[in-house]
Image (cartoon, rainbow over all chains, first blue to last red; front, side, top):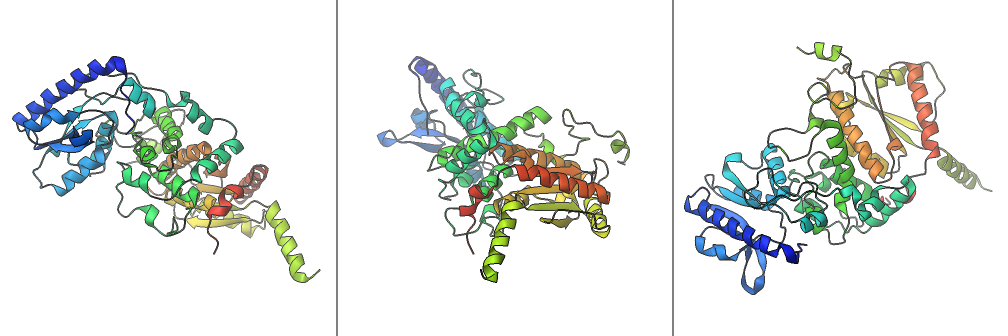
Length: 294
Length: 156
């Protein structure tokens, strides 16, 4: 899934793989978890996710390319027996997604362990990632993030006057074939039933879909929880830059409430609280608001 | 020229001139203003509809998106002022949510001005009338959403 390995960092990646293997070996030996979710290079060099349970399998462990693991881990834990514990080899985005799933009670905290690995600077640039590293790194060194608003493609979509931007977005979103790939691949989209399947919001069986309702409702539902993993964009068969839809809302959350989704397993989204508990920068509230509370 | 043709022309003309506006009015503030404005027979634009809601926190952002997608030019949400909410500061959350929605509308080029949020400014009838009139003036200048919406709303 879009991973590029640069020539000069190959040795760095090799040592990282070796270190990860050692760590995973330790996990398996000490029975800290029943399985370890990672990528395995199988026959004919096909790379796919695999739950490692035996030390002999570990030769085939690889770290690239980037593969979103959070939803997969959730599904494994749902079908597995209650006492099953899983360790996941996580990039920054996977960890953020898992933290968001903790808050939504989709994963129990004591059943999952996180092995944090950093992304390469090429990967960070490809994903336009602001935080290409997890909160706790187990191997390797973190690389600095990229500012997505500096990217030329993003600038074209988000800058300029309203009319031009609207035309541009209409052109891009018109390509949608309503495959629901963006929703299915998103690690945060766990609502049951989903609003996008409801006749009230999005008419069933009509293609092309009503792009405004479909895309904006989907984008807004993730406004305070999008972890910028880019899974939606990678899953899109017609190449709609869906990640750029979230950027302005992410920036607003960071500027107003100093909140980045998924960076803390406990802290809830600030838009769920009022201005007393979660104050907004540059917004004054009357003092007597506090005294109304008991 | 037959009557039907004339009626068609007038309809067409009206359609081209007036923007359509949807107002979500909180029962405790905005709706009282709207009621008073009607009772006093204040001068008001024609093409707006008021949907009474119990609290501004009830207004789902999805409903606003759906309204814009089905050809409404602007949406107004009216609630009580900060601190004056009857329902555990639900209007604080409404403000936070709708401000975020504004960011999304701005990013896609639909424009921040399509959504107006007014909290605690429409208690009185003349205030309500002023807000609606001002908003109509503001929204008439901006381009129609229809070229973007038209072909995606299925014809019945």
